[in-house]
Amino acid sequence: MSMFLDQVTIDVKAGKGGDGMVAFRREKYVPDGGPAGGDGGRGGNVVLVVDEGLRTLMDFRFNRHFKAHPGENGMSKGMHGRGSEDLYVKVPEGTTVRDAETGALLGDLLEHGQTLVVARGGRGGRGNTRFATPRNPAPEMAENGEPGQERKIELELKVLADVGLVGFPSVGKSTLLSVISAARPKIGAYHFTTLVPNLGMVNMPDGRSFVAADLPGLIEGASQGVGLGTQFLRHIERTRVILHVIDMSGMEGRDPYEDYVAINNELASHNLRLLERPQIIVANKMDMSDAEENLKKFKAELAKEQKDEFADPIPVFAISGVTRQGLEPLLSATADLLDVTPEFPLYEEEVEEDVVQYGFVSDEPAFSIDRDPDATWVLSGEKLEKLFQMTNFDHDETVMRFARQLRGMGVDEALRARGAKDGDIVRIGEFEFEFVE
Image 1: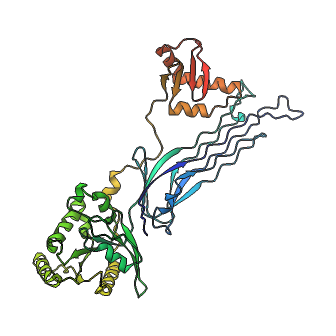
Image 2: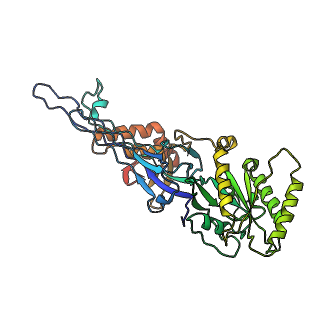
Image 3: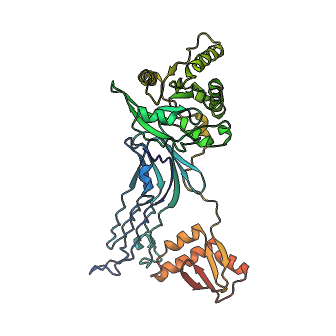
């Protein structure tokens, strides 16, 4: 996998509700027929659904716009329009969904088949059958369908790799991944070759397999957000076994043991739970001249450090990614460890800190008034625009109803307070009318 996409913003738009119908019965012996306009159908929702076959957000690179179908319009004879099917969008397990504008967490999608409605379809407009009253038994009014919800959402995939390779830059993590799997990471002799995790599927001769991720090079201070920082550390959060790769050649003039301690401190300061993951130490570059000597020193330091005699010593495997020596025992040990390591649950803290927002309550005022240079009054606001979109301007009664709704919202008073005079032009969207005192 050359490109690994773990964060993407997409546009979702639910279907608009169908428009209500104004119709009358025309039966021979029924005086004045009475209203017979049906309601519009519900617009389709946009729903995310987890598909265990997907491992990445790659599919969203080429398609970022998802739009559900509108509901059918109401028909005569009181027939309602048909509601529209929901649009299902597949995402991989482990996708976190946020509202791109507000940053609010909408949900964490973790298991196959789990769904999350990210944009709600508009309800259908009511037909004139619904507006009949004893005073007005044959109303000429119907509503247009409610617009479907439209929003930008951000999908983020925490890599669900089983094994994470950690270590300082240029200790040979990318090389190791390329020899144990079919992944072909870019390999360079400079720090920070890996900017996004490279994922590789490792297939063992005995039929077992696991996903290994070469996690981006880490420098001290990453947990404070320096370097590739916290973005990198997020990727480790869901790996079950950590392969701690250490350059035993000491070529860069660094001490292998100090590197080991530094990286572990790094993991600890990000989230202590990371140190609960079992580690295997991979002593790499054993084909170099001083490696044997350095490995002895390293093991001595490690033994000194492990004072707790009941703790299992951390296994150390000497390998060379370049000459491929020592790989098989390392991979078997890794697969054995995976067999006995449970998956970690998501952290409680992680779940609590984000409040999932259901219902889309907005504390915006119902409308706002601006004035154009040509002295036109311009009305805008979510609630007002929705009313406007749901008003069918072909029928006078509906227009009158809209005027009453505006008055009820306090638009007339507000315009008067701002100094609107009789005959001034007022605009909502494309629609202009005169202000009447």
